[in-house]
Image (cartoon, rainbow, N blue to C red; front, side, top):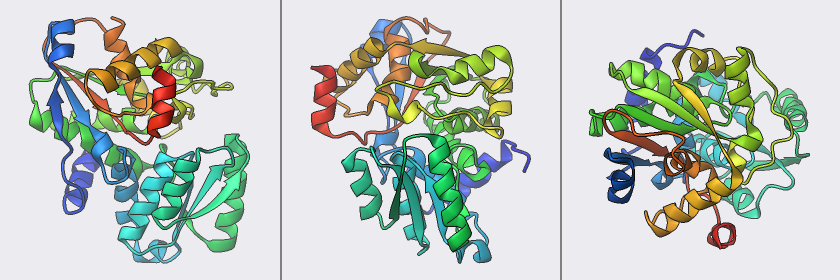
Amino acid sequence: MIMTHDLVRQAAERLKPFLDPTPVLRSDSLTRRLGSPVFIKCELFQPSGSFKIRGALNAVLSLSPEEASRGVITHSSGNHGTALAVAAASRGLPCTVVMPQASPQRKINAVREAGARVVFSGPSVAEREEICHGEMESTGAVFIHPSNDPGVIAGQGTAVLELLTSQPSIRTVLVPVGGGGLLAGTILGIQASGSETVVVAAEPARAADAYQSLKTGQLVPVQAPDTIADGLRSQLGDVNFPIIRQGVGRIVLIEEDEIRQALSFCVNELRLLAEPSSVVPLAALLTGKVEREEGPVGIILTGGNHALKDLLALIS
C-alpha cells in the first residue's frame, strides 16, 4: 500500500465514533521559557493510556470480515499490546500479544485485563518475531505491527490532526521517535491538514537508530538500546522510514539525565504523570536543543503507562 495523507483523514473519520479528542493544554511555564506559546497534546488520557490506541484501533477496524474472523496478533513490550487488546475487544476479536518475559508486570497485567492472551518471549526483537510467526502459523491470526503497519501509521497521524484543529497557529510539532509509526503518521497528518508546520523528532542518544538512519539515508539497525525510555527502543521500518526521510525537519538526541529532568518537570510543574518515553521531546525544549521557533510549538505527550513508584524512583 502506498502511504498518502488521505489515509490519515480516512482514519480520523473511522475513529470518530470510538475515540474522543484528547485535551490540548497550554503550558505557561514552558511558554515563558521558550518565548513562544507551547501546547501539549495529552495522549496519556486515552482509554489505553497512550496514543497507541489510535493506530491499533484503525488497523483493527480496517480488517475485512475474513481477516477479522482469524483474530489478531502482535509483539509488544506494553503500550501497543494493550492498545491492540482494547481494539480487538471492541470488535469482539481474539487477540494474542507476544511480550518479553522481562516486561513490567503492570504492563503484562494491562494486556491481560484488556482481554488478550499473553505469550512470553526472550528480550530481542528476533525472538519476539519468531514466536509471533509460530503463533500465526497455528492460529491464522493477522499480524498488526506496532509501528510499521499502514493502518497503524495512519491512525497515529490523527493525533496531530486534532492538535492542529485545536491550535492551527502551531508552527513546530515535537514528537518522540522509536519505531517511527507516530513520527511518520504525524508527517502525513500535517500534510493532510494543509499546514506548513515543521516536525522535529527527539530520540534517546542510547537508542539512536532513527538519527543514524536519517544521517546515512538507509535503515541502521538499533544496537543494544539501553534507555529508560523503554517505549523508544524499537527499530524503524521499511514502511515508515521513507515517509520520515522526506518529511522530518530533524532528529535531536537526548541523554538519560535530560530525560529524567524532563520527567521531573512534567510531574512537578505540569502535574502530568507521563512515562519516560513521552517526555523525550519535552527534554528537547528544556535543554535548548530545539530553540525558539517562529510561532507556537506543540508537543505530543504520548502516554502515561508507568507505575507511580517507578516514576518516583526515576526522578528522586
